[in-house]
Length: 473
Image (cartoon, rainbow, N blue to C red; front, side, top):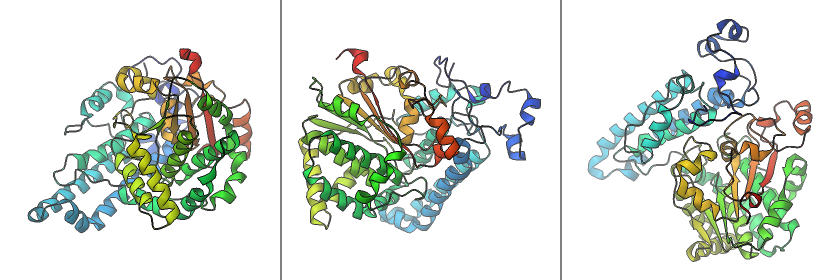
C-alpha cells in the first residue's frame, strides 16, 4: 500500500527503500552525524521508485527540510513581529487592539512550535479548528503508516503540503487575522519589480502571428518565468532582459513537445476550453495571462479557466486574491501600454474568456493527482471537458508523478498512475529529482556535466501527454 492508502506497485516508501527499518547495523554504515542517527537519515540519494523523502540525505528533499523550510518559518515570524502595528491597524477594530496583539503573540508561538516540530522530525498533528478541509486532512494523516507520518520520514510532498497547511490554519482559526496572507507582500513585490520584463513582453506580443514559431516562443517565456519562484529567495531570478536572453536558454530545455501542444490546440474538437493549473503569482502569472490571451485570440479556445490555490502556501503560490490583484495592478499601471493590456485582460475576465475556477482544496492537499478521480470526482469531470490542461511548476509536476523518483526515461503515462482526464501539458523548471519521459541517456549525460543539475533550476521541460487516445475524442 502507498502512503495514500491505495496500491501502487511501482513506488516504495522511504523505509522500504533503505531496507528493514530495524536493521540498525546496515543503516549505521551510512550514518554521518548525530542528527542523522537520531532521525534515521541515510547518506544516499533517493533510490529509484521510492517516494521523495527527507530520509535520504543526498536528496533535494533533505536539503529543503534542513535549509529552506525552517528559513521560511523564521522569516514569517520576523515579518509579523516587525509589522505587528500595521497588522493590528489593518485587521482589528479600534476597540480590540490589545486583543489582536495578544492573538499575534499566540500565532507567533504556534509558528515557532511548528518550526521546532519540523526540525525535530515530530509526527504530523491532526487539525482541530474550522478548516474547510479538516476532515480530508485528518483522514489522510490517520491512514499514513506509522513510520511515514513525520517531517523527515514522510513523503516530501506530504511534508511540504502539511507545513503550509498548518501555517495557514493559524490565521484561519484566528479572530482578527482570518484574511491575512503571510506572503502577500512578497508576491506583490515580485510583480512590481518585474515591470521592465512586463513592458518588454507587452510591447513584443501585441502583433503576434498565428504560427508554431510564435506559439513556441510564448511557451518558452512562460516556462522561464517560473524561475521567478520566490521560495529560493531570489537566487534564480530570471534575467529581466527577457527578449534578448531567452534564446540562449534553448539548450537547457531537455524535453520540448511544443509541436504536439500546438497541434492539440489547433485541432478542431468539440472542446472549447483550456485549463491552466497555476503555480506562482507575480511575473509568472502575467505570463500565464499572455499565453491565455494568445490561445483565445487565435481561436484555439473560447475560454481559459485558471485554477488557483485555495489558501496561501509555498510562498509564491497564486491564490484568488493574487489573481485579482494582478489584473487590477496591470489595468491601473502608470505605463500606458501595460495599462491597456491589463484592461484587456480584465475585460476578458468580465466577458468570461478568462475564468477563475471555484477554489478546490484538492490543489493544496497532499494527494497525488491520480487520487483526484476518487477524492474529487466533480473536479476530475470538469477537467475532462478541457481541450488541454496546462500544469505549471515543479510542485504540480511532482503531484502528477506522485513524488516518486522514477527512472528518467520511464514513459510518462506509466508515472501518471492513470491520471489522464484530457490532453496534458507540463511547463516546469526542474527543481527536484522527480522526472520522467526523457530520451535515454539524457540524464546520464547531464549528471556527468553537472551532478546537481536536477536541483539547479537551470533546466526546463515542455512536456505533452496525448489524452485523446485514452478516450477516443
